[in-house]
Amino acid sequence: MVGTPIGNLGDISPRALEALESCDFIAAEDTRVTMKLLNHFGIKKPLISYYEHNKRTSGEVITARVMAGETCVLVTDAGMPAISDPGENIVDKCHGLGINVTCAPGPSAVVTALAVSGMPSGRFAFEGFLSVNKKSRREHLLEIKNEKRTMIFYEAPHKLAAMLADMYEALGERRIAIVRELTKLHEEVIRTTLSEAAARYATDGGETPRGEFVIIVEGAAADSVDEHYTPEQAAEMARSLAEEGMSLSEAAKQAAKATNLKKGDIYRLLVKGENE
Image 1 (cartoon, helix red, strand yellow):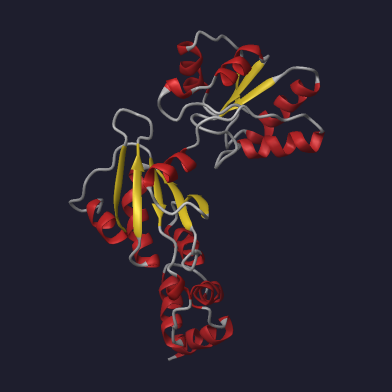
Image 2 (cartoon, rainbow, N blue to C red):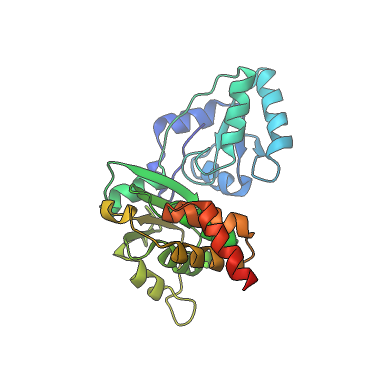
């Protein structure tokens, strides 16, 4: 595995270049993106695509070639392969086949954004991309409502407004840092709050998001994790989830996680409300 620059090509390491120059072939998430990197450094190597939708068939081809004696470098479009990336599957497959896996580490948007944000970094949780599906996104956010560690998310510009709105609704007011275009010309760190960020990028009349984003969110305060909810409040939370298409049972389960109340009590109130 070889880590590649997340923006500035000057961040590539000598060891990464050596690995790219000496391998037999390169497995890339997007061969067009990787070709630009190779052309910049004057490297010519055969490329094979390896991404989310062909990872099973392409993975078999790659491992077969390696088992036959070839050396392969795995790269992603930017940053570390296998981090929020289908590369984790082929790395696991290689270990299972007894193939030796090594890594020439490189830039990672997760830790780079956390470092430059100035947010608490002693303990953090990487949450990756939230689902584009509103119901799944709400479930994810409810599960982490009481997470006390700093949380890190990736997000694409066209999904940022919906993400921030749902995050504010689910998590309440939190300090956040919005980090965009890391290591590039227009790199920016915006320290703000969830409510202000949701308003800034609101779908109606808000600022148009540009570039790739890493969102750093403050963990729940210790005195808010044990926030007391009444069963009626928990049932109302579950009811709103059910209205979005979740089953009553799953809605009660998610509300129980967020409120620390018993699922059965919440479910009974839900059913009672449905029958009234």
